[in-house]
Image (cartoon, rainbow, N blue to C red; front, side, top):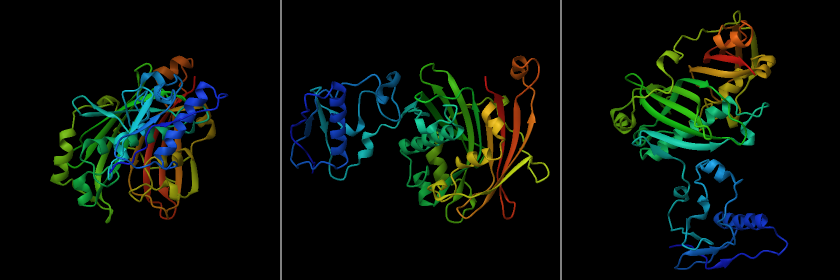
Length: 388
């Protein structure tokens, strides 16, 4: 049975401006959507007559550059439901037992459904001191797009990115290695478009790649590739990919690489020791908010711990242009960690030409380890370029 309201008109004081009226109208409908109003039940459709609410402002986040932003199509508000024939009417339909999730358009498939595409606007809380997106922001957006890819593919189960067959077998995906190359960092308010796809990685793994484009220029500004394996969520041991799971994911495999083979960081990351590390930061403890749905520290959180042992002058004067992370074991809530870094200058043609033949770029080797038994958690390598 549908919950409906009949012909509700919104009236405003004469002293409100047009923009204020629009905001009041949208706020009213948001309140209805989230239960702040008490709609009457009826057999027809609910029609809210909202004065001027259908007109969008060019400054509204949903209409930036004429793109779909943060899962919302421009000039349409997902919480408003379907629009009627009258441009001033908004039709909201809610049937018993239905889900509101279908109203939120997270992204879309392209390239014969092999590639999943989603757009985001960079928020104020996703930028760092230089007013550009942080590496943690980039990693979070990559992860969000990957999870929405699985959820939208029709094979998603009840796990954190797991398929139905994986959920039945209590299996989860865990990342073993990820490499990110940044050409340009987005600024606050920029809109980015992310493509992601998957392919096989050897006999018992899956590779997931991403590219990020600037929505204005259409230039690719970030590339990333990663390798994933399957783990039992109860025993916490790695598992082979069951044939039933392979049957689910193989139809989505596409032989395409975001980062060309010759640019892939496949070299071994050396293990740091107390003797080889230049900086050691101790006493890093995971918080409850660092844990993800798989009951371990989210892989993005390690970036912040890695930066704990990077000198402040490097953070201020250099951009992090490349990061490779090699995950070696889980980290749980009770663990206390150490962050270790060593650094060396590297010769690049770009750095030499811009600094009168003197290279100023830096390569860092990192290690996150358990403070108690020195067990390795993450090895990492980063490339830093001087800010212009």
